[in-house]
Image (tube, rainbow, N blue to C red; front, side, top):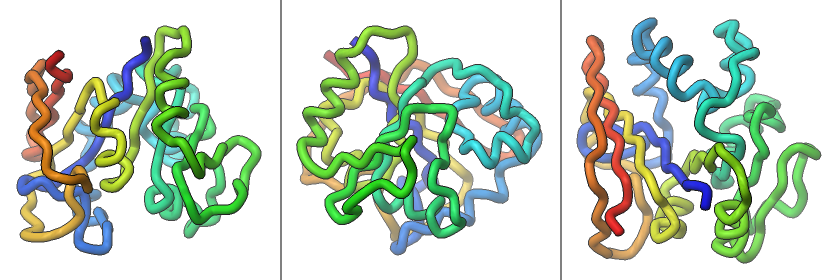
Amino acid sequence: MRKLTYFIACSIDGFIGDPSGDASAMFAFLDAEFLEFLKAEHPETIATHGRRALGCDDLANRRFDTIVQGRGSYDLALKEGITSPYAHLRQYVASRTLAESPDPQVEIVSDDLLGKVRELKAEQGELGIYLCGGSQLAGALLDEIDELVIKTYPIVYGTGMPMFGSEFAVTEFALDGVRTFGNGVVVRTYSRKR
């Protein structure tokens, strides 16, 4: 069984963006030390156009070969004219409103998202599935998430888009590791308690 990992950036107070979902305030923390960590440990989580700009487009996928993201996350790329933002991964976009994919490398999942994710998890393979966001998608898939990798940036939003847009439910995860960076970023890794 392959793992579904929610790899997400958030503020100290647990928001993944401002009330509209804009997370650009976090970009200031993408310094050399943190980018080296991402390139070494999670290169596939850097969008293809970012990999090219950083000169690391040739890095092999280390943890994931598939990405699942919501329409809001995908729209960020579409607004920039990028129809295949993670060309180095199999790409799925959960959307009830996007009628057809603007790119042959991107599959739209408009119904039975849970079934599709379970199908992906049941595949054979060494690499897992990267859940990119957003909030509503993570909330809908909470019961399927096996691992959390939370990049906490040293900022407070006060209000905004929560990590999980879901009904109240206590779900336990075990802390597997913590890594800190000179810029104040903390990366915590959790696995689901079974």
